Length: 149
Image (tube, rainbow, N blue to C red):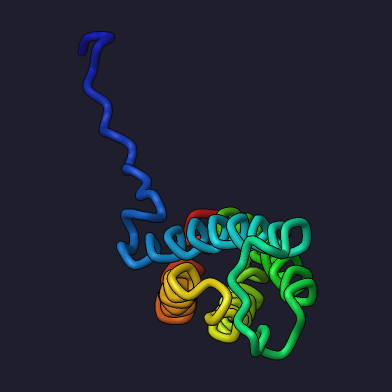
């Protein structure tokens, strides 16, 4: 036999995305969570630093003053960014807070609808998609995470 004998190929390791196409939805959820959190941070800072930016009717905003909404958006945005980073790292702890934060963000933007209607509807829709991605497809992503170790 020669020195150049053919060796059997090592079994190919599948990447987590190849194991389950649904696991990509978790990546989508993480991306949206991070982006929406970043945008919500900016939205909160805008409400705090430039209150005249938002259109407030004679009835005012729902539940809080514009400054109150600024703080709500600032806290939700920071929590969403941290949770989005946790989802990128496939941290198991990030799934449940991700669902809760996206739900709270959806409620906050629903009540903020009179002040920024177009943006609130966009964020509300994306929050619902994030919740769906984290609830419907997290078992697939967690399963692939444990296999890849």
